[in-house]
Length: 335
Image (cartoon, rainbow, N blue to C red; front, side, top):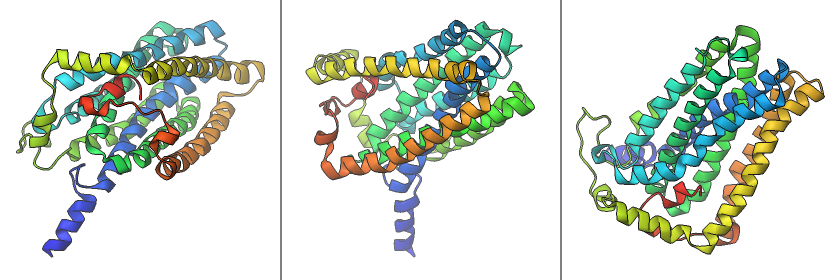
C-alpha cells in the first residue's frame, strides 16, 4: 500500500517537481486561461466592431492599445526574479496574483457602458486585460523553467502553446455566439466562469514538496528555492545584459519584431477585410478563424514537441545560454 501511494503521489501528486502529469495539466490549464481573454479582446471584439461599421482606424487603435502591455514582459520578469514569497514557491505567488488580476480585469470589460460607442473605455479595460495576461504569462513561463526537467520542456512547450491556441479559438467561437445571442455583458460573465475555475489549479498545486498552499497554511520554503533565489539587482541586470548582447539574442529580437509586425497587420486587417469587404458576419469569421487555429494548434502541439525531441533542440531552435543565469532572462526576452 505504501509503495502504491508513493507511485500515485509521484504520478498525480500536488507538487509540480514530482509529477509529470501535474506539470502538463497545470501549465496547459494556465495557458488556456491566457487564451480565453485573448480570443475575446484580439479577435471577437474587433470582428464585432467591424460588423457594427466601426472604421478601420478605430479597430486598429483598439488593437494597438491592447497590444502594448505585452512589451512590458522585460520589466516584469526581473521583478519576479527579485521578489517573491518563498514558502509558496519562487513563481507560484506571482502566478496566483496574475491569474486573480486577469479574472478581475476580464470581468470588468463586461461593465463598460455602451461598449460599441465607448471605444475609450473598451480600450482602457482591454489594456488592463493584456497587462495582467502578460503578467500571468511571464510568471507561468518562469515557473515552467524552474520545475520542468530539460527532457520534458519541448513536449510541455508544445502542450502549452497548443492549449492556448485552442483556448483562444474556442473563446472566440463561443464568445461571438454569446455576444450575438445574450449580449456583451452576459457573454463576458459566462466566459469568466472558466477563468475562475482555472484559478483553482495554481492554488492546489505547489512547486515543490513541503511548501505552503496559501500564506495561512502550513509549510516552508524549499531548500533549492532558497539556493536559487536572486537577491541582488546588479546580478539580475548583469545577467540580462550578458544575454541581450549575444548575437543570437539580437537576431532573435529582430526576427520577433518583424514577426510581430506581421501578426499585428493580420490581426487588424483580417476581421476588417472579411466582415466589411467580403460581407461575412462576425460568426462566420469566428468559425473559420477558430477551426483553422485549432487545427494548427493541434498540429503544433504534437508535431512541434516531437520534432524538437527527435532532432534535438540545437537543430530546431536558437539556443541561448541564459539558463545558468538562474533567472527569467529568457522569459523577459520573449523566449
